Length: 239
Image (cartoon, rainbow, N blue to C red; front, side, top):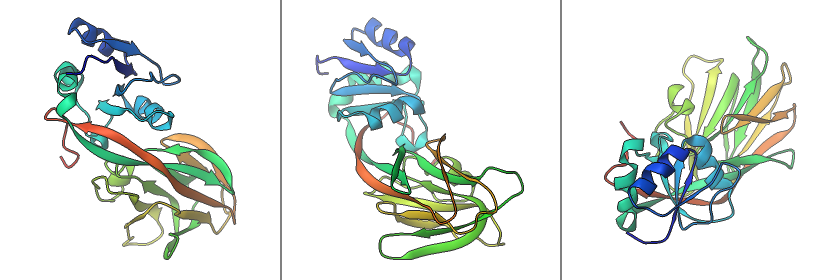
C-alpha cells in the first residue's frame, strides 16, 4: 500500500480505526475535503462533498449506497490496504441550472416534484437531439448511474452501471396506467414545466435547490467524472 496519507470524510471513527491499523490519515469534513490522492467517503453527503471538490482523488465509498458500490465500515482497513490494486469506475457528475441560474451539482439524482399534496403538473423532457416525453405527474426523477439504485429504482427505473453520461428518466405517479421510463444521455438534458397548477420544487441529491415555474427549464450539463475504487469488499449494485 502507498505510504501517502488517506483522506477521510464523513466519520471520525473511521479515521481512528485506520490510524489504529497504521494508516496515515488526514481528516476532513463535508465542507473541507482533504487534498489527498485517495479519499474514504463515509455516507452520501461525503460522496457529494468529494464530487463537488476541485481535486480528483480516487474515492472509496463507505455505506454510501449500492450505486457507488460501497464497502461496509468494518471492511474499510482491508479495502484501504488494497487501494493500489483497485479497479476504477468513472461516475458522471452534472451541473444543474434553472433558467440559466446555477442550482447545484448532482452525483446521484435531480428530482422535480409538486409541493402541494394531490396536485400534479405537466412536464416535458428533451435531450439535445430528441424529445423524450411529455406527461402529467406528481414529478419526475432524473437519476445518474450512481443514483439509479435509489428513488428512481423504487418508482420502476432500471439499475445502471456507470457509462459516460447515461441516466434514467422516471415519472413520479404519472397520470397514466402504463408509464414509460427512459435511459438517455443526461448531458444537456432539459426538463420544463408546461403547466403551473402547483409550485414545482427541484431537489438536487435530495436537497431542495430551486423552484421551476411554468415555462422555465432545468438543465443538466456534465461537469466531470468521479473516480471510484472497486475492490473485493465492494457491494454489487445489482443485488
